[in-house]
Length: 246
Image (cartoon, rainbow, N blue to C red):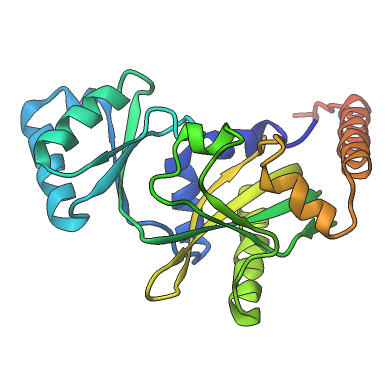
């Protein structure tokens, strides 16, 4: 159930998400990526560190390419920390991203449906006191302020939903997904952060809250996702592979 294999690959690959978003003309957090094989070459690793320092600045965030929930993510304040944190992130993945630090709040939309018929909710907003860590995401005593609906003005809300609609097509999303953006301050620019093709469903998670606010309760959206998965499987089983004559 949920997203198919292709969109799930996009969902777990942050570098690929950003490339596709930029290709679709949706702005994203400035970043650089490096693989472990390249990092092993001292001269290329040093060049990468120098490039990050001069184009992204400090602080910046280091994260494994294919993980979520802030696992393996660190904020680097200087060149020594940046090198150390990249080494640490390689323990989790063969590719590591270094992202420019963004000041603002997280904006999240819930997606439900298929490529030909889908629903995108009005966004919610998360305003963490500091770095939105794994503990902050999943502990009930989180100090992050959550707003459903968001505090965005109507123009910004429409921009978020327009970007989300564009990304649904660009990523080939199916079933359920959460699309995350940044509301940058003080510029108020909306930029893409990442998607989550298996969004959190804890008591403090925004995905179910956003759908419930638009009168789509848990039982209803879960049935829609299950029905869609069954239809997709039935369609796959009915496919006939034909060998064309030479």
